Figure: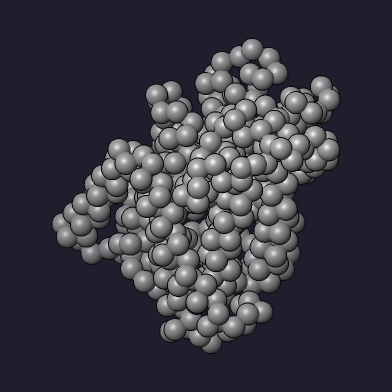
Length: 439
């Protein structure tokens, strides 16, 4: 077992919840709700529910693994140890491609669009400033990054609450029909787009080695964060479409309905403390978690050690974060529209969950004693949820691919290159080092 913390050290329950909510209620919500409305119309509320239902199927098995085997980089280490190291490597690389060239530029560009709704400014320039700011904050160290995360989380919840409170009276039932203008397929595609919006809590297992009393804290944090976010999402989807209509909301940001019913002072609060802080918490959380992946992949000999090398002064993986910063900044100025950036993000999220679910099934089969008390649920039930999550995630991946086949081909081609690198590394670079961790 690795990464267990003493009672007085590490990330506590409130911090874990703030990180999870920051990852879930982040840039994707503020940038992709309008994209999802373009596919599903008023059915976006159902799309949120469908995406969350599939996400929960993966969350509980992930929580079981995180509670039973707290470690760093769990989304890689669990499948690498219990299923297949090559598959775990490809899923980590797939997520990295999606996050660094899709997620981060998506969040940054959307932040610029929200600022532009208040004052005329270049969205790309604002996005570049945010990427740079949180790169510098995280290079300085994890403590200021975690402090910033908690502060932004509190302001974010307050801003979202004001959006819903003012928006519910503005809902016009006529704007909520027809419920399925594009049919069930439109709802399914919208759920695929929104999937990563619901997925963030999974990544708390990547810092499980730093969570205080992880066997208790991780399940409790999921129990608090997931219902909270589900209520927020359903309410925001209902208010966004119900207040201005699906046509006005399609492919737009939440600034459109905010302008329709929020008083001017609350519009500023929503943009700054809501949209900008949500996006900022996502960018910040990506920088917090990325070094964990770099660390474990470098330990396994699958990435150059320099990417995980830590700064002598601050103890942070500065070269790895430089690589992330350069990739995301380059993607920010690419010609990809927001919808394609969101789809690219969804590819990596859906694919990452599959090997983690296979690891949960393997743990129930072969490590039953270790996982028996991890959750107040039958291990067999959790394994069944994991087994159901696998085809559903693959189905979401296929739906997303059908909407952007060329982009999916590029993403898949990059994975093929990563697979070729793995084969070359393992066949000509000598044996991989034996991991110094044990589940």
